[in-house]
Length: 439
Image 1 (cartoon, rainbow, N blue to C red):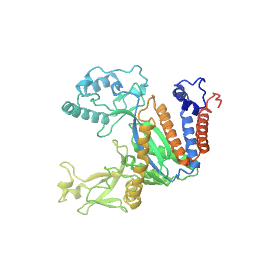
Image 2 (image 1 turned 30 degrees about the vertical axis):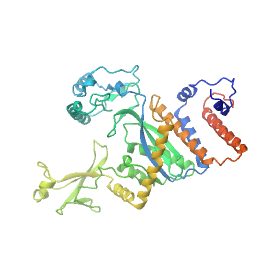
Image 3 (image 1 turned 90 degrees about the vertical axis):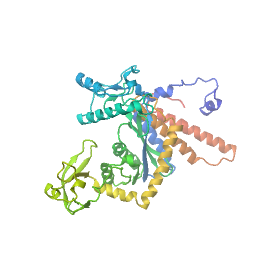
Image 4 (image 1 turned 135 degrees about the horizontal axis):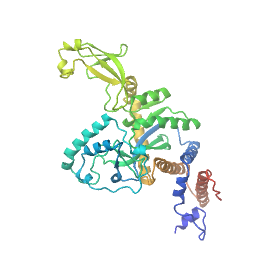
């Protein structure tokens, strides 16, 4: 029907065309390494034209809707006793008591269907469910679709086992994938993209992103110097990791970070805090917080000193006899990063990040087919994201090398160049297979 596309692809009018699902079927046959290699090849073309500076990368993430419905969620079980227990404490909406649509085929493994939450996590879920039962039927939209309480700790999707429930304040819970994106600040070229589970924090993905990005840029002769990201990537472990790699971080600390109790003065040399009354609160031990899974340092005063304190009612509870609090193990890394963020360079880097990576995500979701993943599984989702990033970089590449056309000869040369690039791209993509493509 489109003669211009036939001409562009060098097909005659009476020549047989490939079946429309050839590309989607072929995509499932190729491994992820093929897509990553083609993406690296396209990035190399951009590097050759001077479109990539390499020293500063802006990183961000966005939830991409998975090809699975919230109505297909099933309750995880480990045993019959535990299943009955969870069913009894599952205080959810009236609509959830009805029969939901079941998946046609359960593609999960036994491990994915098994409850992995510990007792403390289950207790917190029970508490949330009780609050949900009390408030849900009185709030707007309580009887709407998807108004039941769900969690990745207690539910799984039999349709797409790799899809996870993403939770964001002010937005409905959905089964999503997390797309982690890295963009060069020079010409907004995508330097890395990867699919992750939506229940992972951004800070848990950053180390893997930096390792992959550092190797890719190093092979092209670039040295990664600056990392720009939003508050979601903030953690003491990340700050320490980036400093160890020699990378300067411009990542604002999260709102829950505190260098210590308000009114207390920290002494770095002695590693203790001084209370408003001038008493020492010494360091006691290093422990792992079970809720956040982060290393912390505990500081605890003496009950003898706090007993005679004139303001103990202000700082201590009814049953607590001494002042005790915990501070992140990476306090110094936090302070150095915060100092950079509030500097003149930090404010400049914040503007660079907002104007670089966020518009790229908007383009990918609105125009490059990344609004929803139409495949199943995280591996297939990763392929879809790489194809979208390739299309984006190729479009950037063509705009960068395009020159003003003043004659028909130059027009023909430009069309020939575009056709040649398209044919080379398909040839490189298919050379990993055993198919013989006649160009």
